[in-house]
Image: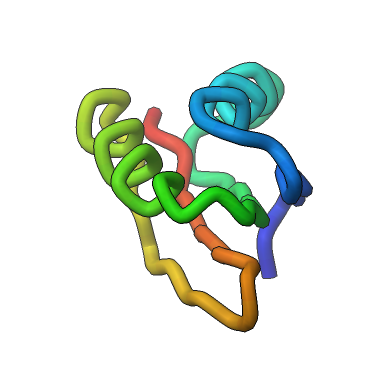
Length: 75
């Protein structure tokens, strides 16, 4: 289960990533963040965000129009 949940449904790029970046600042390394988004571009956005930020994208899924990302925070 994720430590924190960010509901970014209905938001367009780059807002979900920006909100995730802000939320991650309040989490410790090793904790997890679950993000919900509806923007189809969020898949590539979160893959790039994790790669450049050193975070681990543990997985992502797509159900209906909602994309779910599970991210382990670097540190």
